[in-house]
Structure formats: C-alpha cells, structure tokens
Length: 368
Image (cartoon, rainbow, N blue to C red; front, side, top):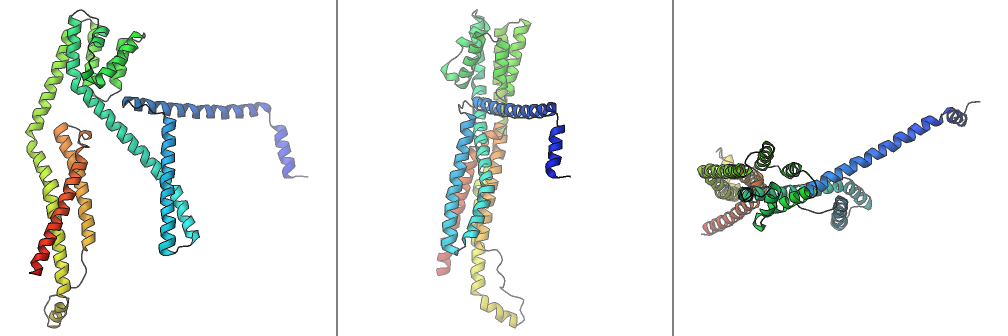
C-alpha cells in the first residue's frame, strides 16, 4: 500500500549519512562565505571612513540609519492618520493600507537616501583632505629635501619635516613614520599613503620618490625638483583660470541676475494678461457677435504653474551653472559644491524681490 508516509520512510531509509554530511558541509560553507562577505564589506566601509578621518563603527552606523528611518516613518504615519481621518474621514482600512505601503516602500527609500547622503558627505570630506594635502605638499617636500641634504636618512627626514601647519599631511606622514618604525618597509608605507587619496600629484610624487630611492640618486635634489614642478603646475592652472574669467562672469550674470529677472517679469506679464482677460471677458462676446476675430476665452498658463516652473528652472540652472564655474575655475566639479546653495539662494531671492516690486508697481499703475 502506497502512502505519503511510506514514501517518506523509504526515502529516509535509502538516504546515506555521507550525503547528509555533505549537505551540512555545503550549508556551513555558504554561511561562512556570507560572513566573510559581510566582514569584507565592513572593512571596506571602515577604510573608506578612515580616509575621511571618521571613527565610526559600521554596525552602529547601520543601526543609526535604521532607527532614523523608523522615527521618520512613525512621524509621517502619525501625520497621515490624523490628516486623512480628520480632513477626509477615510476609513481605517484605507489608512492601514496606506501605512503598509509607507512602511514597505518609503522605509527602504529613506534608508537608501540616508546612505547616499552619508557617502556624499564622506566623499566631500575626503576630497577636501586631498586638496589640503596637495596645497602643502611642495613645502613639505622642500623641507624634507633640506633635512636629507643635512645628512638625515629618508625616514628621519620625513619625520622631522612634520609641522602643525601641514595639517592633514602631517598626520598622514606621522602614520607612515610609525609604520616604518614598527618594521614596515618605507616604500610600502608611502604607497599605502598615496593609495588612500585619489590624487595624481601625490601618487606621482610618491612614485618618483620610491624610484629615486631604489636607483640610489640624490634624493634631496629630486624632492626639490618635484616640489618645483608641482608649484609650476599650480601657477599654470591659476593662469588658465584667469584667462577664462570672462566666461565665468557671463555664466554667473545669466544665472544669478538675468534669469530671475526675466522669469519674474514673465510672471507679471501672465498676471496682466489674466487680469485683462477677466476684465474684457464681456467685450469678447460682443466682439464675436459683431464678427471680429477677438476672443479672451481659455485659461492658458496659470500663475501658480508658471511660478513652480520658474523656481524649478532656476534651481536646475543654478546647479549646472555652479558645476560649470567649478570646472572652469578649479578643474573639477567637487570644488563647486559650495557654490550651489549660494547660486540657488541669490537667484530665488532676486526672483521673489523683482516679482514683488513689479507686482506693486503694476498695482499702482492700474489703480491710477
């Protein structure tokens, strides 16, 4: 007699212990691989944070973002329940369905947005540290060259060249010196330091220094030449930036002054047309009855729609204009992040002021 119980019994009897052991081995191996992947991911995050000189445990960071998203979702949920129940009298079933959608989709979006904002902030801090290092690198190399010419070894010359005014570079060289003292090869320590920052100037300087040490040349003269080349490159960039100042002025004028003024005047013109259309609404019917092709029907573009379009256009234009100015002046986009809120604030403020003044002047004109 065949039954599910008998079939299961036969399968368990025919199953070999070796296959069970292999199954558990595979399961254990997969769990270990998952743990290794998690550890590697946390290690990458920890190294990324160290580049920005931020000491945060990735586990605590994940818990903080999770708790923040929960609190934001709770606040939104409470507001939606109160708003829909009081204003529209929606049933609890609809409210519960809205909460489910909120906690499934919005919660994931919030955590994703928090991680993106955090990574952007850390990336900007790493970029600022890189810029600070490149700014003082020539002076540090020249001071190191002076110590080498005075008879010091390279590791001691690097250690005694540390000054508080070098800021981030001083802390990084301290770490290199400590690694060298603890037994790490100086070349390896310098390469680790250069790999921490996405700086072509720093990597090229460290590479030339290591090659000079291996070749056994005069390291002091080499460091002086590297510092001189970096200074010449900076002076060339400044000259190029000065040559394109006219383009920068044009972009700033068109974005911060011309665009808000034209948008504000266009909004006032739309308001004038609407007022005239409402005032001459009766005349249009009479003109149509007389056979004249003159009508004032139709709504067209509303004032609120145009205001939304103008503000969105000004914000987008300010964003890309700040990026263009940064690329022209500094050679990269990240240096222009600080210009974006300034451009947006100035353009929106000028738009609101011009629109308000033009509206008052228009009211005085029609009142007269």
